[in-house]
Picture 1 (cartoon, rainbow, N blue to C red):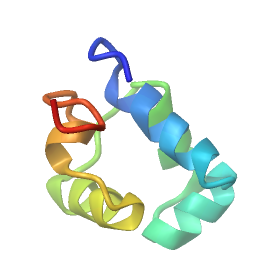
Picture 2 (tube, one colour):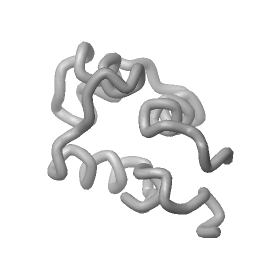
Picture 3 (cartoon, rainbow, N blue to C red):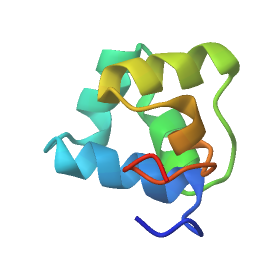
Length: 74
């Protein structure tokens, strides 16, 4: 993955790789669908609690979500 990707782009990629719609992801994370849309468009950022939930749901690190490392850890 490109290190220049935004959080929103990474989130959308992860969601699509799992074959989930925004509504399904919103339900899984216990947030509104509009929040998923805002995150994916980089209009707002998740709280730390939500960031942890996203990382756990997709089994990725917070560092990856934040763009500090690539998916392969480099």
